[in-house]
Length: 160
Image (tube, rainbow, N blue to C red):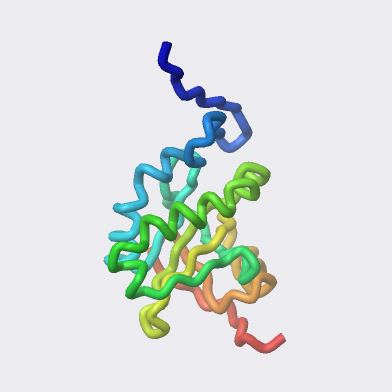
C-alpha cells in the first residue's frame, strides 16, 4: 500500500498554520507563489506577504524587524534564476519564528542602487507614528505604507 503524505493543521489566532508533518516545505501557500514573487520584486521593488495564506496585506505599515533577521541576495543572482531558491531557503530558515509569532510576515525589498534584494521578517503596524517609531527601533531608514505604496522615511540615519 503506497504511503500518503500527511499534513497537520492547527488553527491559530491569525489563521491557518500549516505544518508539514511529512517533512515537506513549510507554508505551502507561500511556496506556490515564489516565482511570481520574484517577478513582483523586479517589477515593483518588493512585496510583503503572509506566508500562511500567501496574501499581501492592503493597509498598514510594513516594518522590517531588523538586520538580524534579514538576508541579502545579490540582485543578479536573484533575478537570473536564483530567486525562488533564495525565497524558499529564507522561508525554511525562518519557519520556526514565523510559526512562533503569527503576526510576522515575509518581505522583500529591491535595493536597485545597491544591486541587492533584502529578504526580511516584517511586522505590520497599523498606526503611522507607531510604525515610524518601530522602524527607528529596528534601525530602518524607511518603512512602507501598504495603502499608498510609498516608502516613508523614519529619520533614522544609521548613527546609533
